[in-house]
Image 1: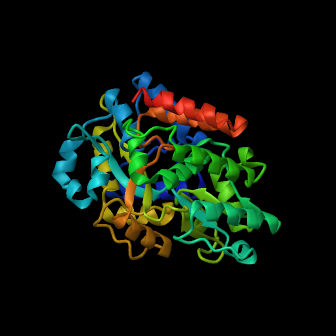
Image 2 (image 1 turned 45 degrees about the vertical axis):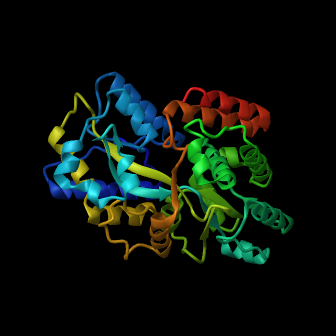
Length: 386
């Protein structure tokens, strides 16, 4: 089984799944072939090599929707609709979550958890010392002014860890979502809203300002190193998905004391959905019965709750108990029911893998040259391929 879960909290969460399936069948031994680095890119590259060589693992981690579509179109993932129907999973999932696991009416993956991508992780002490409050009413303009106030107080305002480009891509997509809104964000990927619109251009300018307020060593840090700097009081905020919650709590930082959280500005009702799921190969599967047991175990409500407790996510299944999860996770579960749910581009979920690659490369280039016109021209050209 392959994944890219190798940080402290990710590895602990993955072990929950492994322990559960090995408990279901003590004769089984799960080989954890997780690959670190690249924000998942290294694991996907290793998987592609195995698929090319007709040597697939029994199962692999992937994001639903756009990323899943690439595997479906490549004929690489198995149709598991019969397993869905046998267990009645569709009725136990939010409709939009279930839909993102399927194409043309057939299911190809199972969702083990739901992450929110547009969350600011904060240091309460640093914010209080600077007289800054971040809450659901905070606008992007107020946020950037607040970060400048924190800079004036002598503390680094924003910690970014974009050694793997997804972190800066996720920060930029959060600014774009905030400026264009949920519906126009979706329309960017159906060619109904242009990437060179005034609001996207303003988001680029916001992002450029944020980069000027970020730690100078951001290109040398990983996402988890940046998040831990926030909890240690070395900076005020960091934008990251709520896998950061699992990482910080797992490292011994106390929620609400060492670190806090807030929706990204102007985004209280936009939920940037990043899904965790697993699929099995369409052919040459080494251990078919074990792979089916793996998928079935992942859809056990109790397993999803235990997994979420380590990962910082919320269970995908509505039948899973969230009452034992943290205050943050219970807040997120409530928000997920009412917010406009959109999918992440930085994680290749909202559209094709090819388009996501163009976006990641454009963000990398922008981090160097900060050329707004060049970035917008690249993305408008890419829209033509959708």
